[in-house]
Length: 423
Image 1: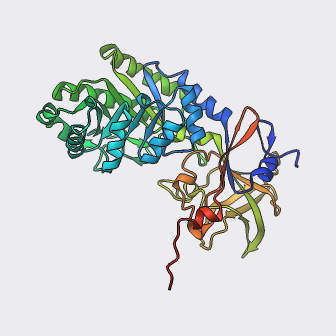
Image 2: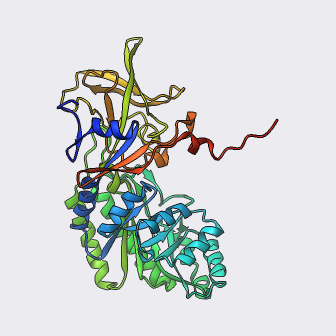
Image 3: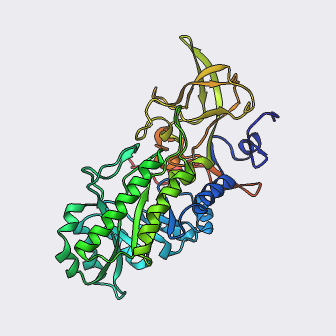
């Protein structure tokens, strides 16, 4: 054990690697709790914070946030069941997604969720027909709108332009007669999500102000009673050089000012802010072990036992192109970097590079390398079956104890679903 190695809640990273193997994801529950609570303490009490499970669907991550009061935004049957098993109540769960199957809609109706978020008027009609076949009361629904205002500062725009998500505001404005004809769904609010990875608080405050203003207008024009408005999220965290973290105080002050005005006129309206990356990314570290250190044509390479098969977000999803996530030597964590290495994984493709020309202390075979801020879009956004290495273990350190919260894939996991044809 190196005295200068990375520790999580006092636990040496070498001990975790020895117990659980590498590669693996490690989540620090203290960081996860502090991130949520720091936002919760500053946000207007009328705003509920929901975790978007797509960012990190690990049941223990969801369970911890749920125990602190977070709701769940889910988009598949598996996510719906994960939230339930994690202890998130149905009344604190919403289901959205542009392509819901009939089985998903039936499950949502049966589950008694706070709302199903409909993303087209045809889906709304279909849900009304489906709900008519149940013996339950009207199914609560929010309409996801695609606003007609423009936003800036997003790493990936989700609204305000032609998109598969939601219903154009212009179409909602013309839907009053349709809404009046519904008998088995209760349209009780609106949802909008403008984009992700916003790093300037002014952009997020602008989005909140415009979404709430649009909700007021649509309510007046269509008769939709605003009992819930989800004004999205998209809070970013800095990954790359020259990026600065969100000003949390300025962000919440600006949002709270807008929310206070809206809440005064709509005191019974539930407001939802859905977040994924912002809540979970800071708590996670992707841990790999150096298998080889080699030179090729003047460039130094570290070949590690995990790469893009587990952490595609670090190299090429969305806007993450040709820039490095923060990468550190975990074995020599306190040493100053004085070398430059390109960090690759074990895959048989030149694209398996998780960091180009990364400044590190000298790396030796067996050293542990960590990709920081990796608690979001890790295994869930990666091709874990490429070359059949499978998905890594996931570990949560909680109150000074390391817990295995997802075991590593085994050969039986990888081959058990296949069937050999007899030739």
